Image (cartoon, rainbow, N blue to C red; front, side, top):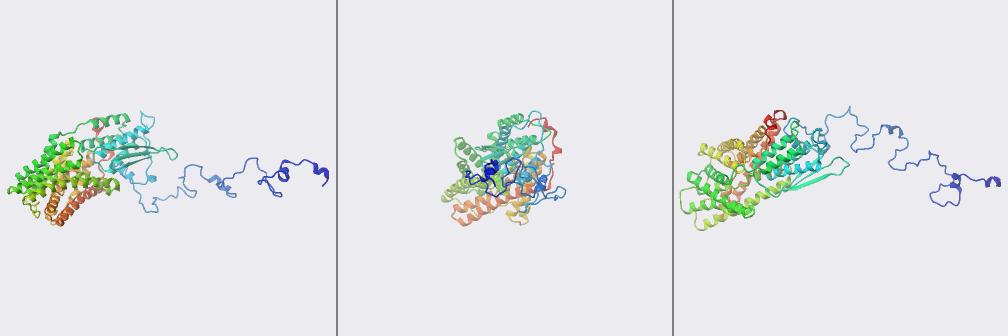
Length: 551
């Protein structure tokens, strides 16, 4: 090469390659050819399409959701049903079922398998006001949970309200004292979460039924209930006074105790004595409640007067069944409502709420034990002849005892502040429960099995009546299980412990716990069977008056 050629200016590319002044370690080595491109920077991402697969680039899905179907998936060849590898069966959703069953079924589905929400056009709203919908949902859930409704039913109601106002991506969570709900507009947006604490609980099934009717109207696509109207009706429900005054509740407590004493073999004198003891205990409990004392001490004091009257009969050597007096007083105090709700929560998978409810039941039971045991202990010390081996007959007077069971259910319904229209139904349901129990007991069935069968029928009929009334099943089941509560087993267990026969007392208390569990499981099983087999109260058979007379 000539010296003149060496002086020719080199191109930029050659200079970058051969210029010794460029010392960067990223300089292209000598002898390495560089492919000329279009001037744009080369793709360096490790997710770039490899060379040779360009032919399939056009068939690839657009970038977006991670839930797109794979390339080998074909709609024509899709399977009829999909079962996950873990073996979870597919749950079919009955579209014409009542909202309680539809929402409960959806809550039991995995989130990815829930059906999409059908958009509902509301004339007065551009779209759902998320904070207000969540607040309304929490307020409705608070009233239901405070009224004693099960955790799954509260979640179903909250889920129904949210979906009715267009919030399909919502997840309600219910514990014993805390309600929370989370709504996520989409997979890429931040979720909105709201919560509410339940600090006060009260038994008012009239208010509970009104809340259920409100949720029923919100979920009805023909009603088109606006948020403002729902808030107005909810405020009216909160302001409503209890249907029965305090003196009526005291009389109902006495009637319940008297009917329970007749149920276990008492006569007219025993009825009056048990009723007086229960009414005195009820008034003392009201006095303590007005002073702000916890319910534990209220139950302790309320259990003392019936036991004291029974001990007084024993000391006076009157030919009266003192055990029937004490047993009748215990019937008015046993927390059957909380027990059924706690076991139901456990059977449906809400273990935290179930544990809290059962712990509450245990505290109430301990309070009753302390009150009765204190009186019985002093009665035994002063010479009261109370026989723990005395058998309480239940089949000697079947007609009278069936009537007593119906009176017990009626007075229990009044104590639960039920609507007057439901009192007759629950009274008949209680009579049926006791009739079945007495028939099975006469046929030499074990008490636990007879109780479970009778409670199962209570749950079945209660769910059936609830479907016809478009209401909660609690008002039709809770009072009806009153005649089945283990009052006599509890009393004899406490009496044996008071007489230093601890082993015999613990056996009797274990029997009482078994009977209580049989009641709760039987009620829940009957309700589940009714949901599986009955399709009553469908959306096409609503009462026309519901849309015109408010709540």
